[in-house]
Length: 273
Image (cartoon, rainbow, N blue to C red; front, side, top):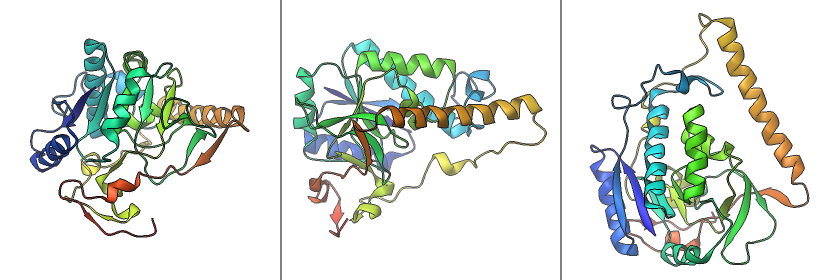
């Protein structure tokens, strides 16, 4: 399975880190140039970027567009791919996990990361792989496997209304989504939450632009549209949860223990996490 790594040209330290992980794990990969607010297409003033639950940062638009490029690549290849942002710390179990997926059916998307937040997942495991049906995620788009049908569903949703990449993935209920359990990746900004000293220090590229609010100067209909979409999304999530009572539960997915085993540059400070 090919790995697609989203990376900004100037983020050379991140790419060096990812390159070392790819060599260590023996994964086939290619780099995808990340979209920036300056290279964003359609541009930030296009209506497609203004149909989410709040005004989006230009950096959020750019990251969404970067993931859209990855989904187009998956469709072009006609095969599932592992999609990574360039700050994903990976488990040594990952190559074997990806090999298992060559024989799996009925799957469109698998999140392989965890991010200190509970997810709504099935109580039982999939019979063919260490994954659970993922009914509702909230955050995280740094590490996932997407199949061509899943990529098409994601693109169709994004082309109607752009959104932060993790929110868009979490809300694409047309996909058959699953969660790796244990999780095989965390983002570097989560290292300390799980008792690790991060191998490189990172700052959020998304947060380089402040979060826009809802200016009072916006027309009332526009401000109301954002609020109604927010309420609608919360109601859909609540209904999804209620519909799966007994079949699923909210739980924190633990990362694989071997994230502590010393991938390139990682200094483990093992704790009770």
